[in-house]
Length: 351
Ligand code: 1HN
Image (tube, rainbow, N blue to C red):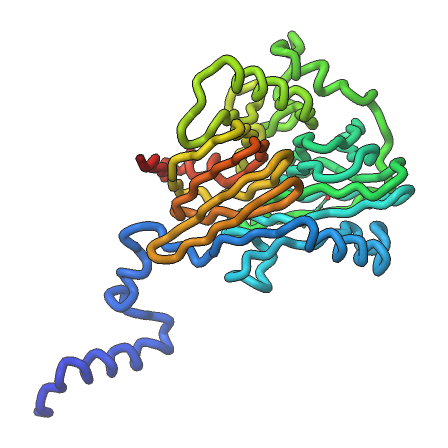
């Protein structure tokens, strides 16, 4: 009989012997697999539009929208470089289209949102209907619908793209295909989806034309702004959010997109918000005004001052607080619908 091996050696021998059989001990990784609280690798980040815009315009010189298919600069989380994502679950980028250009028609199972940042007069076409893009508009491209963009504007048009690319990749559920037409045929006049579904009424006989996604392609800024302005004047201001509304699917009252939740909020002049944290990491696009966001986890704290067209990301379970001396309007999106579908959404409002 051999003498029994000391424990450490016994274990190392076990690990080495089973390694070729694709076996590994849980007890060595358990604490990392099931953290006591969310422990995202993402970090906070800010993209000042003044710094980004020159690169976008240089991209405009370097490649056409058609050759690029989509001329986009990806907003990459600094801690996830090379992974084409802004959080572990979401993709974000800034897309440029120049006068007369076309971004060709294609479709994919990834869902997309557009949030218009600069310029007017470009259009996006979804499922036979064109929508003119104006700053502050929130536009949806439902999963698997053909979409193309074009511009009859006189200047550059820039928008924020938000896609659920990492989520679809995680599930290995991505399909894509090109349309035969470079620009799809228009089959309905502009504004049809908004007239049908965007006035607190819906067609008497219809099914949900895009499944779990809202039948409204465009949620125009003027309406969102009007609602926030009225509420700022007449309703209590939330101590954490200011005045914050979420966009909704008029057929369900739920989220407009199955994977991405979208929000618009107004910080009144002189607002000093309380801190909160939530499990859904969120991407912000500054529409109007100026302010400051303080994002912290443990000892690490980031303070960003923001102005129009700046973008920043608040990662999962980081505390954040917003303030604004002059007032501001912020658009944001996160993967909250997925958290809620899984029953794992968590939010803490700190006093
Ligand atoms: C896409 O189709 C668009 O349609 C934008 O504008 C960004 C990023 C990855 C994959 C597809 C668009 C995209 C994209």
